[in-house]
Amino acid sequence: MQADILTAATGLLDRDGERAVTLRAVAREAGITAPSIYLHFPDQPALLLAVVRAAFAELARRLEAAAVGEDPRQRLYAAGHAYLDFAAAHPRRYRAMFDAACRPIDLDARILRLFIGLLTDCADAGHSTSTNPSADTIALWLGLHGLAHQQSVIPGFPWTTELVPRVVASLAHLTPNHPPDPILRRSPP
Image (cartoon, rainbow, N blue to C red; front, side, top):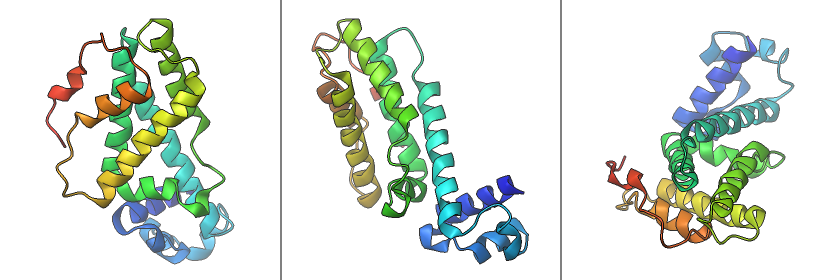
């Protein structure tokens, strides 16, 4: 039943926003009585926190699935694209992930470790001049997060997928002799 409650809460969040995630609305969506939610979650903030934790886990899985292959630069680009794709596909969920009410989560450590590893691989292969992959990962995340936020609040702007390699290459200190991101050739969403 807990999985059904989380699915219902996530659906409400994605469809109607954070304010729609009330215990009564979630119960109605899940086809259960409101008091039965208390067996799994003490209150609405705990339920929303569980939704946010699940969203971070899903984002981490998507980044890990995207960041495959031999070339560390292409893995880094792919992770950047996957990050923005997740934010674009789930804008309300993405906003809730960084809402002040969910501050205990902040940025999932698994996501940070993934980007630190990708940037370290680039540096080790001589494709990045980064001397501090941990600090540069924070800068890279800030760039991706800022772009994700702007894309969600200004959806009519003619965003281009060319921004991802520019943000990644700049903030990851990629060397200029690397080939362009092949993902650039894909159609914008």
